[in-house]
Amino acid sequence: MFFQSDEELICPVCKDIFKQPVVLSCSHSFCKDCLQTWWGGKPICMCPCCNKISPTCDPPCNLALKNLCEAFVLQKITSEALCSLHSEKLKLFCQQHQEPVCVICTDSKTHSNHSFTPVDEAAEALKKELEKSLKPLQEKLKLFEQIKGNFGQTAEHINVQVQQTEGRIKEQFKKLHKFLQEEEKARLGALKIEKVQKMSMMDGKISALSRDIEALTETIKATEEELRAGDVLFLLNHQETVKRVQQRLQLEDPQLHLRALLDQAKHLGNLTFNIWNKMKDMVSYSHVILDPNTAHAELILSEDLTSMRCGEKQKLPENPERHDFNPVVLGSGGFTSGIHSWNVEVRNDAFWGLGVVKPFQKKGQTPTRYWQILLIDGILKAVAPPLQDKVLSVKELQRVRVQLDFVKGKLSFYDADANTHIHTFTHKFTDRLFPHFGSLNTLPLKISPTEVSVSTG
Image (cartoon, rainbow, N blue to C red):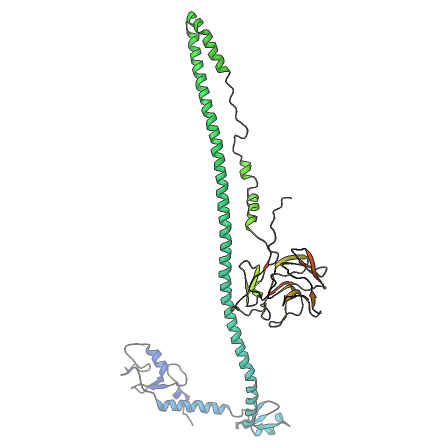
C-alpha cells in the first residue's frame, strides 16, 4: 500500500500516527484522547485547527483513517523484516551467526560454509528452548513473590517487636520509678521525723532558757531597787536579797547537747549507693539471655527472655537465624573466649536438651556441630555428632549447671543442687559458640538468675 505523505496520517495535536482517530464536522481528524485532552471539559468544543464549534463533544470514529493508519504501521513492520543488504525477505536462519538472512546472503563470504535452516523451523526450535527457560523464570518469580511476602511479614513483625519491647521497657521503668518515688518518700519522711524531734528538743530548751532569763531579769531589777533604798530599809532586806541573788547564781549555764543538729551525714552519705544497694532486691541478672529471633515457632519465651516452653505454632517471619527443624532457641551473643557458667531449671518429663552449638550454615537443616545433654523418653544422653551418643546414669535432675571453658576446650555439666559432675565434652573450639536450649515441654525450661551483689571493697 502506498501513501502520498506520512503527514496525512499524523495527528495535528500529538504529532504522531493517529490512534483511534475521530472526525469533526469541519472534516479535521484527531486522536480521540488528544481531542478530549485538548477540550479538557470546556463547555464549548472547538476544533483545535480551525476553531469551528463542534455540534458534539463525542465525535464519531474516522474508520477509513483508522484502517489506513493500521495498514501503514503493518507495512512499516514488514519492511523492517527485509535484509538490510539485499532488500530480500529474511527466509533463512544462520546457525553460526544466530541471525535471520536472505537467500542471497547464503552465497556471501560472510556466511561461507555456514549452516542454514528455514526461519520458521529456527523460530520454532528457539521458542521451545526459550519456553524451557521460561519455567524456571516463572518459578523464580513465584519464589520472589513468596520472599516478598515473608519480607512484608518481617516488617510487620518488627513493628510488633517494637511495640512489645517498648511496652516492656516502660513497664520496667515504671517499676523503677515507683521504687525511687517510694524510696524518696521514705527518706524524706525520716528527715521530717528527725526534724520534728530536733526542733521539739530545741523548743524545750529555748522555753526553759527564756524562763531563766526572765527570772534573772527580775532578780537584777529587784536587787538594783534594794541598792537605791535607804540604809535601814536596805539592812532590813539585805539577807533576803543576798539569798535571792545566790539562788539565781546557782542556775546552771545552758548548754547544747551533742547531736543537737540534724544528722545530714546519715541522710546524704552515700545516698545513691545506698539506694542502688537496696534496689538490688528488685532486679535480677542472667548470664545468658534467650534470643527470640532464633526461636522455633512452637517455642514461647517469657517477657524477660529467660525461660521457654512449647506451645501452639506462632506465625513468625522466616528470618535466616530462626530454627525451623527442631524446637530450639539459642542464647544471645555467643562466646569466643573465657569461662562461662549458667544454671537451668529442668523438668523430667517429655524432652529437653542443653549445651552449646555452632551457628548452622543453611536454614532448614539441623546443626551438625553441637555438644549437649538431652533427656528423651526418660533417658539422659550426652550427644555430640559425629561421636556416638552416651547414656548417662544421672536421674531426677532439677537444676543443671552448664560450664564452658572456651580456651581449654571443655564443656561440663553438673547437678547444680547436688554439686556433682554429670559429663564433660572435650573439643578444640575455634568458632563462636551459642548456648543451646531445646524443649517439648509445656512447662517452662528456665535459666536461673544470678545473685546480684553490691561490693564496696
